Length: 243
Image (cartoon, rainbow, N blue to C red; front, side):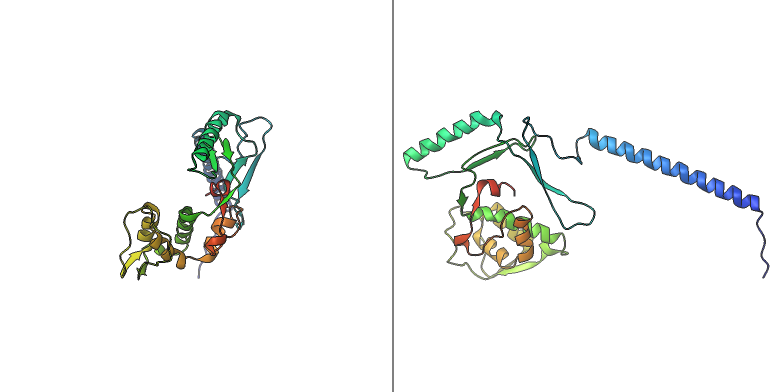
């Protein structure tokens, strides 16, 4: 076999050109990345810093999702101080609650209001515990959507609805209901549960939910694991606001 030798100056020239091309490409990439970052910051779409408190001297805490090697996603941030700017609306709510108590139409009430644009909040009796009842349908929805991220075509899988469970609470909100003996996709059941507040759909979904995912929907937010003994399952307005 014959081997043709390449002159040394060709190798030097090739190395020089290769280095020059790599340098140009690298610098162009840096400029493009800087431009994209500037656009993102100008549109206020992303932030790598915790938000500043709206009130001087008020600290801000952040809750982050663990379990990742290189990232720590922010779940929510919260200001420690109640907003002084919302004092008027709080007083109006207090007056309304007291008037309803006087009428006998209300025994107790909790209110939690938050302005998402700046994080300001105010509350009344925010830590009193209540049975979530139909409010628990939201974390069930969140759990199934989270499961769908890891299980292919989960929302298209079907479940058979055999019959109504007479032990379920009376449905005061009357709308569309499931038909006994019919099968429904999980996506359809989620729609019945949320849009129509259907208790049969809720029970069917809860019976097939992944308990690990369901518990993490609560514990990732710093909430205790939910109890399946619903007589012992309570949550406050402030805690529920995290969902």
